[in-house]
Amino acid sequence: MNQLKQYLLKPWFVFVLSFLSITLLLIFISPNLFEGEIVYERGGKQYILQAPLSLAYFLGMGYEPSEMTEVVDFYLTKRGYMLAFSLLFGFPILFAYRSLLEKRNRKNK
Image (cartoon, rainbow, N blue to C red):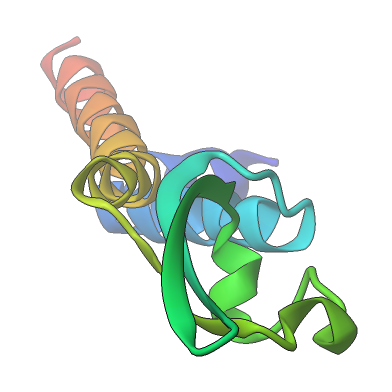
């Protein structure tokens, strides 16, 4: 237990652990949180549908291949990329910074 506390005071360990945890949650729970667009083709014309997307879709998970028959492409919008970046990197950076501050606080005591 004491060794775990030592690891949790290392900012890089906290960053990697929280990054992997958040990434795995967003992929395997597969919430449609991220603003995106789906391009599909029907009758020779392409249409763009704005819809919330999941990160699992980009790994080929979370949908049935039969649902993708008319879909040409799907991608995140700028807001979707910003939210993904904030969740995947922003929170782990904040957690790592917090562990750095705790480490400095313990050294000063």
